[in-house]
Length: 81
Image 1 (cartoon, one colour):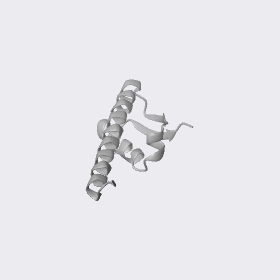
Image 2 (cartoon, rainbow, N blue to C red; image 1 turned 90 degrees about the vertical axis):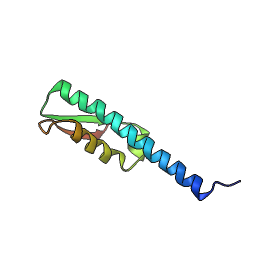
Image 3 (spheres, rainbow, N blue to C red; image 1 turned 90 degrees about the horizontal axis):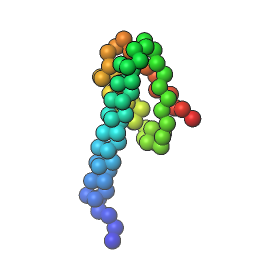
Image 4 (cartoon, rainbow, N blue to C red; image 1 turned 45 degrees about the horizontal axis):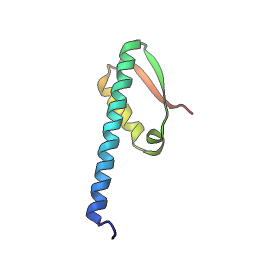
């Protein structure tokens, strides 16, 4: 049997929700780190297949980190390969 369009759409939705949650959790950790070190400018090295393969993951992380920190803490996310 083949997967129906309904099944495929549900799998797509679950994947989107899981990747959004992953971006939020990683962003929370990075924001905590930025608060802890209290530097005005920080470059954060990021690695992993989720970060590399999902085109929206970087943008989600930036958005979430900006929401969780104060504007004094500037940051860059850089691929650490």
